[in-house]
Image (tube, rainbow, N blue to C red):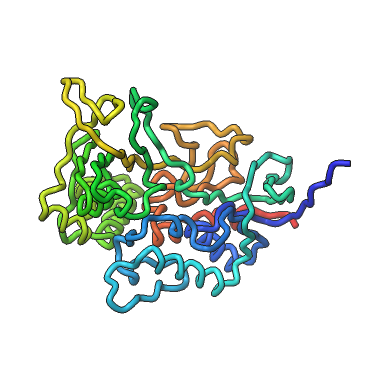
Length: 358
């Protein structure tokens, strides 16, 4: 006889226990709602526990809080390390006694009539009036397939696979991408290897005095202007790459020069349409991520520009669903620590305004 799944009922299920999920949990607890946070990770810390060894925030601790508790500063550390962030998220979860269940992978969210059914890999099913999806993007790396990718004899890896420059010592490496990850990885790999940087467009560097504090202030002003019916340029006018100390040091060494994107891969390297080529032992693809939303497939959400249609964080197709922390389309700067808190506050306020039958 097939095992009957255990079914539990709550007001809200939060899918994902990283920074956005914890921020949602903070406001749900304050609102007095019955909720659970289901996290696929084995340990607290979200995607921060998987970044490369030298990964740091762009902002000081004082400008990187989740709601309710400022991130403690660490002496001698201008920008918190990934380990610092993991420690903070772990303590935050404990501080507010958030009901996080892990490791629990959510397989599907389905319409079950009055409630949404959240099916998990443990066999347990949660029925909820609302679901907040906060699974982030780290689980869905984007790797563009260039002609000849299957012929290339060297190593290919994505940002998610990169940990430190040491494995590339003495080798020839191509770094692909025009954003912060590419610039930071290039900066440290170029100290031990022969590197070539390629990007689809010419990388745009921000002024040296711009960090996460400035970026968030600019984004905040742009959001306020947009809500008032005015349009401003926002952070894109400042550039794409934050000049953190390692990137500034790489600039001084003269390695921050990108060639246009290659057209194909060959057995021994990369090649351009004009017949030129470059031999390399490895290609590091710093080409970004897509939202991790496979669990929402049964809801049949319609998409706009590749993303589920939303009004703020709320799905236009399934109003009981909120999408939190995936980037600006779910709230300005919502993929940052401080931005996740602001977006979570709005999402929970919307949920509270909808009557919940008990």
